[in-house]
Every structure is written in C-alpha cells, then in structure tokens.
Length: 298
Image (tube, rainbow, N blue to C red; front, side, top):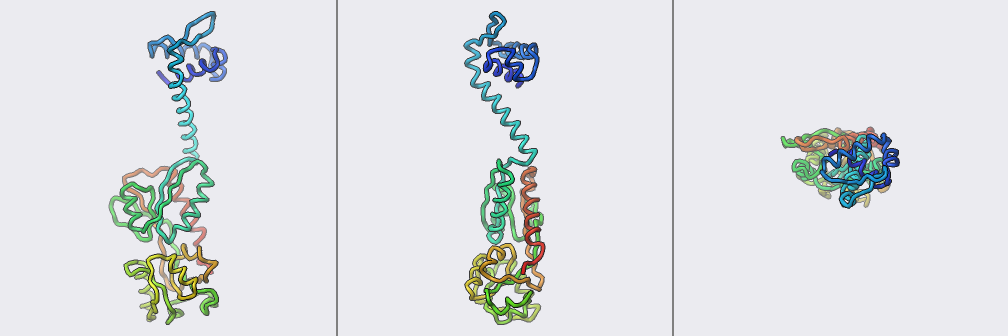
C-alpha cells in the first residue's frame, strides 16, 4: 500500500468516476484503475463493485474514506510545510535574551516574524547564566549571553561586539562633548552595575588606569535601571549601547573613549543539530546588531 493508491482511492470516491479522478490526478485511466486494484489486493478488501463500466463504492470503502482523507490531507500539509521550510518561511524557535538586549531583540523578533509569517517564535528574558543553562538543557534553541560560556556541553559564538557608551542627563554639561572619557567623569555621581557583574569590573579597571576615582552613588543589577536613573538627571553611567539606544529620547548618548567592548554571544547545545531556520535567525540577528551598532551613536 502506498500514497498514490490512497490518493487514487480518494479521488474516485470524491468524483464518482475513473475518468474524472484520472483528470484530477493527471494520470491515465489505466494507471488509476491499477492503483485501485493494487490497493484492494493489499487490503484484501473489495472497495468498488464494477457495474456497467462504473466503480460503485462498497460499504467498506465508505468506512475507509475518513482515514484515507486524513492521510492524503496530512501528506499535502507535510509537502507544503517542507516547501516552507526549504524557503525558511516556517519554523519554530525559542530564544532567551538577557535584560540589557531584550528590548532590541524584541524589536528584531517582530521584524523577523513579519518576514516569516508561518513561523512561531518564543522569546524569554533571563540573566546570561540562566540563558546558558537553558541552552545546555535544550529548553531553548538559542541563549544570548553577555559573556562567553565555558560549559563543554554548549557551543558559544560571538554574535556581535560594540563599544560602550557614556550616558548623561539631557542638558548636562558633558552633553556638549562629542565623546566622553574617564577623566571627564571625575566627581560626577555615577550609576554602577552589580558588584559581581564582569562588565562593571571592566569599567572600573579603565577608570583605575586613568587615575579617576568613581563617585558611585547608585548600584543596579539592570542596565535599564541605570538608564532610568540617568534620565531622571541624578547621575551618569557607562553602559552598553544596546540598551542605551532605547532610551535615546530621554538622555544623551556619547561614545566612551576608553575601550570597554560589549559582546553578545549565542549559546546552543553542542549535541543538537542546528536547523536551517535557527541558523537563519542567528544570522539575521547578527546583521541587525551590526547594522544598528556598527559605529557609536552621538
């Protein structure tokens, strides 16, 4: 028993004649009759009575029709899905982003979904370490992190890297500068990220090398909170551009002259073969990051 036999059976049941069924399937009448005969032989059932050159359905064929119809329609859907997958129009992906980039990634996901109308996208937001754990446990297809992950069960690749920016309140004296360096921030109330944050350690190192004592007035584990505090006019900060750009209407953004790179990594389970759709997502996300952050924004 094969699909062509089932397709021929369904066509005869729907049209009532061999002639009409063969025209629908674009095959000859002898070929269609052969498919019906072979199906009867395989099933060991009489599906049609031959009367005056016509095929009259038996009670057994009427009982089989719903199942055959489901199989034929399912095969059509499978073929359509395969076509979409080859064209990367359909697919399913679960992504975990860390908070500082979740706004940018959300915007990208909306654009990506509009271009892949039959795709299903699940977006989660957690800290970088949790995202790596989810990828290792195969609970997400891609976990985005701010640091490289050494876990041997995952593959970790750089998606993008951009220089840090300095953010100051609107109207602040430093907003007159085209770029801001560590010495410009001497004495300024400063928002620092959490003490265990590797990015904070990198920022503090460049200030230490410049001989500048940071006036840390606020600490926060989230870059969004730092941006919010700066927008309220109470402090300045050095942050990644991914989050800062989302606050550009509420504060001033300037290139930070000291080198503090902001990496974004994609983490995936090493033992899971990457689908074409997931790879397309990562490639287009990389392009979106590079297009937006290829140069510091003043």
